[in-house]
Length: 452
Image (cartoon, rainbow, N blue to C red; front, side, top):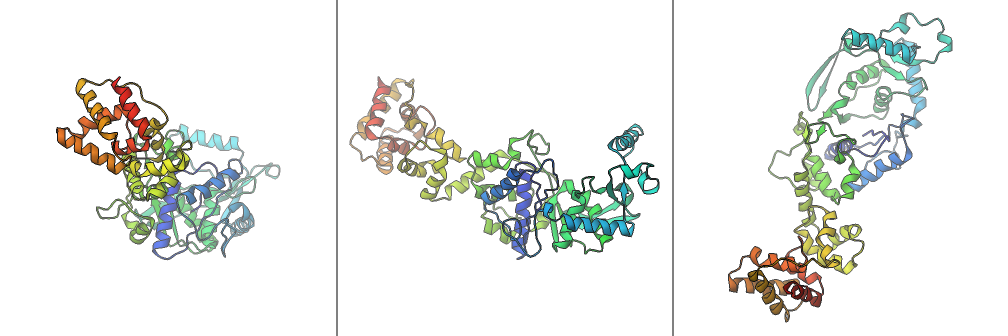
């Protein structure tokens, strides 16, 4: 996995990280994290830190990489510049690359002419055959000279891929500031780090033939296999972008109270299926059954309803103590004992942890006077009278209310809705928990006030 520290972690990067990890763990391989920080203008230390924090929040880790080390480091590309310089010199000496002295204005003029003629733009190679008279005073880039022919490789998801080399153009591999481009640094590093499998987004599919040709020109061994993962789109069928879709940013899910276990589960199902009816998985289960051949080619659509459902499943799998611990940041104003007491009730209602504050708001805010008809008033009066002598525990309260309901032939909704309106005035945990979380006298007082 080779993310760029040029922004906060994208959901697609998290899924790519996960698929790489599942594949490596499934086969007992080594999973490498490499930081592509060659964009001097946009790379920031805080974004690099966000990469580590985001993946570790998901409970995912790497075998080799920054902060962990490994025998083939360093693992930041900014610390490997000498390797790229030597590789570029080798290509220049072999005639497989050349210096380009064209200015940005000259290159834009070429692009404008291509647009005018309605044809794809390919660099003219004029610096290969006729460098400018003032070349000695100009900055230069280094371009790779694409050979004639065809480049063929097998994608683990898409099968055999064929690219006519004539459509590739001569890409810049070293920028004017002496730093490598992605298409140069990445294949050099893949070879020197002995990478066997590369999984990345499908937007990199067109980069692969260039990278394979560079590796061949340098005499390095090829990567054994590539897999280009389908893009993730929103309900508008557009690729997830941080500008248009809040769900594109990984930290957004942490802030809203999604469990990392649920996120891992959901990310695995974005564009992959296990071939069974099972949908709820632990990370260990995913490692055991992951098969890259079951990744789809078509775009994967992000589904909030599916994520909420999965998150609810993982919330219900937590112990009360663990759920209370996870809820703590979302309920800063409630005592620990209250949060722990509320955990069993919240389990059945929470799609996300941040919803807990809304469900428990009645503990600190008295509801407005409810509008009750005569029958509902009688239900509330009878309940207040019956609960006066009941032990104030969820079990005892539930037993007393069910006894009343069955004796009078009331349905749950018909009986519990006016009680909830009197106690809380809004959606809450199950009614016996809603009552038990309030002090007994406060709960009974609210019921009597509702009658007045």
